[in-house]
Image (cartoon, rainbow, N blue to C red; front, side, top):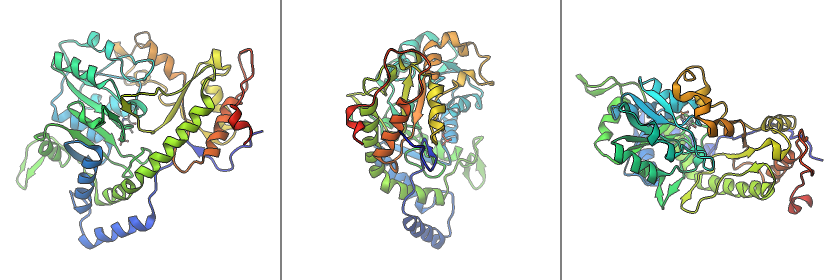
Amino acid sequence: MVEPFEQPIFVTRPLLPDLQIVTAKLQEIWAAQWLSNGGMQHQKLECALRDRLRVPNLTLFNNGTTALMAAVQTLGLAGEVITTPFTFVATTHALALNGLTPVFCDIDPSTMNIDPDQIESLITPKTSAIMPVHVYGMPCDVEQINEIARKHGLKVIYDAAHAFDSEVGGAGIGAYGDITMYSFHATKTFHTVEGGALAFGDAALKPRLERLKNFGIRDEERVDAVGFNGKLNELQAAVGLAVLDCLDGELTKRRALVDVYRAAFDGVPGLTLPPLSEHSRTTPSYFVIRIEKELFGSTRDDVYRHLQGYNVFARKYFYPLCSDFAPYRHLPSAAPQRLPVASRIARQVLALPLYGALSAREVERICELVLATPLRFSRGTERSLPAVFVSL
Ligand SMILES: *Cc1c(COP(=O)(O)O)cnc(C)c1O
């Protein structure tokens, strides 16, 4: 019998570096008397991240959403942008806030990323760009998307908020597309409390982006763009440097926990596990299963509620779809019948707890709880745990 957890288990927990290391960096900031506007910590973090992400150019922002907005503005996009409904709503908002019309494209049933085979049918004379998302850190089909963009003269901005450690063909994920956005929010794998960055191939974008995030200011007497305040401050940058030092350890722990989940759920009828890929590397940002009620015998919501009864707070990521939210559902491309795959998958997904401070035993208990969700539909047999777990 599985007991409820004594403390609530959330889907993630922020990676907190040793406080003494952060304090030492705060002392440096106090000594420098420089709190924002590209100080020492900011410069160090920008260089460290450019190396870590293996991208040619990088610029930091105070969050991922302002970074995405700056990307849209600097590329001068207009009209329509083809994007995915299966994402966090900031992706869609970054377009709408800049007067662009999001055009929702259905997703691939395996990767849950934008389905590249359906992009071309959505291109119109008004289309200026594609904004795909590397959902749950799983890389998109960057080659096919690149080919479509080249053929039709479109820009590509990737939302890599989940994909800090992702790779395709041995290259960092930020090496693809015109611009790639990273989010460093506290709940992301790498974070700066709040923060973000853009990576890009064209070095000429760097001064333009730097002006945009600093009110469009060129120098003391000139403002040449309608900019905003998108600057990452010194305290955030210092936390980021400390977090970066413990990131690899966190990733290793998370990948081991992913293996525990996979072993427990492998072959369970009605559960679909995240796809494995030989050509790319996924960031272990989330562990998301899909629950098919007829085969599993319970719905996603049954499992979600069952876990809550045991103090485990899974999340329905991404449900509802962005195309179902009030500001977007009137759009022609938002009609659920035009997004059959995304609409079905949004009802099946459940993100389970994944962070390095969880123990393997705790993950096993969570797996037991998932499998012990009361049956609502007859499935012939009870669910059973894999033999390796029963002894624990
Ligand atoms: C977190 C997230 C964002 C927004 O990033 P912030 O840093 O919170 O502004 C955008 N897109 C996706 C897919 C995200 O998960």
